[in-house]
Length: 426
Image (cartoon, helix red, strand yellow):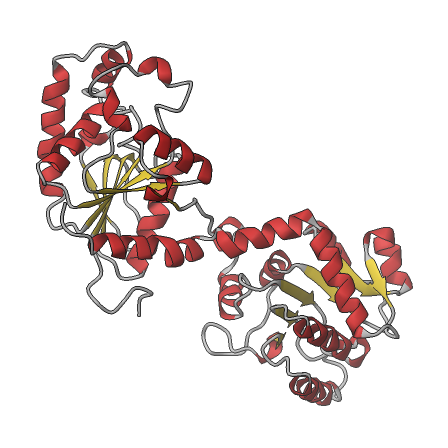
């Protein structure tokens, strides 16, 4: 089931001078768009001057003359930068147009990255404008990362008249996208369009890939919806009574009463040396029900993993959980050492622990302590207030809430493409 509607999904073509493995920001963005759309069931193709295969069923077609570094393009670009339109420009434009027309056949939406606002291959820019004027283009989205006419570095290479003025001429029937508010302001001014005619869709990040999560880590993040929580607490301990896990449950309940979306991950299995630990887990499940935090409190020992069998948290998956969490919570009444504090320190995780001598010896004034006599509401408030004062926590949650590819593609890119596909033919 795709996140787009059950109606036929638009056939999408993404175009740029180059694509991966060529290294560049635009190349990475285009690849992420293509791969996500393919996973969602879109028929998606990439048209590039230079690039290799992409995974996830994305068809890549090469049209070498799109490449800004093509040997037939480079001398024309050099002449244009010096203010001369060489005789080869018209023939190059015609050759590019002849290659584009069959490549765009059957396409519902063509997304052109940068080529309509950047001077790196002005023959491509001219070919697209000519095709639009003749009604030979599908519905088009001009995705603008960089702008030639507003960049002081590029201005010496731009001159009065055609083809340079095409870079500040709106293409017929096209929608425009800028990657930031700043680019939106500059683009609307350059094209003399109202600012509302330029949609802002920023670039994004795939947090699981960036953090190099294991398959189990990815599964936990997705299944438990960790990316979208406001607070993720990690309690890395076996289920034994001295860990006072019920206190942590009460802290979570206090956070829920404050209308926070929260997850508490109790990672450990049953303690192996006391048969009464099984009874303790039953009691904890009952406390969880009574406090109405069944969704918020996760006993990892209860989870059926990706294969439907019991999930054993490996060392690598445990490292993932430290990267996924916002804070460490250790409400133990007794500890001999406190290994989780070492792990939390290496992953820059704020640590909230009971005031025990072994834990103070490790963390000193770098940890936040409490006693089990303190009301859980106060500890919840301490955690929340501490996190909200941490700029790194707030930035992390802003990124996860608004800048992951999953969020951007679902909430902005897919709706844009489906709306564009429904536009009247240009």
